[in-house]
Image 1 (cartoon, rainbow, N blue to C red):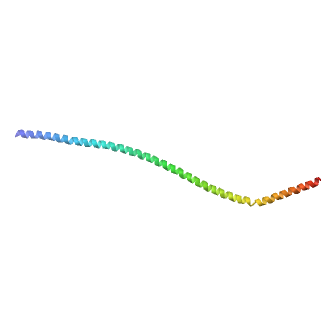
Image 2 (image 1 turned 30 degrees about the horizontal axis):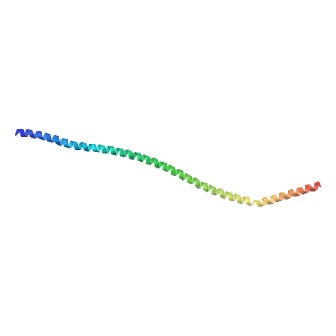
Image 3 (image 1 turned 90 degrees about the horizontal axis):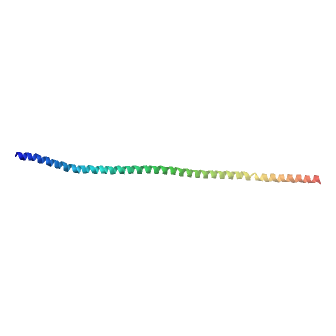
Length: 127
């Protein structure tokens, strides 16, 4: 009976070693899988981070371009308004210029008449 008792602890130790090895192998595999997965996730995170940086850069470029476009449009609008005001100013000046034309014509006629009369007087005195 002693032998059986002695054998029994040995068998138990062997069985426990087998159980430990059987337990250890899948746990190590599982840990390796977790490590590989974490490496893959780390790479994916880096890729996402780079994509986010590129996206932010693209967004800032788009905002800058939109600002330039808005400024150009505002410039065109202000130029249009400026040209409209210039046109209205020109129309006003044209109206001012057309009103005194009649007195200018009258003045010119008066000057012509004065020159003719002076010329006539000059001719008479020379004869």
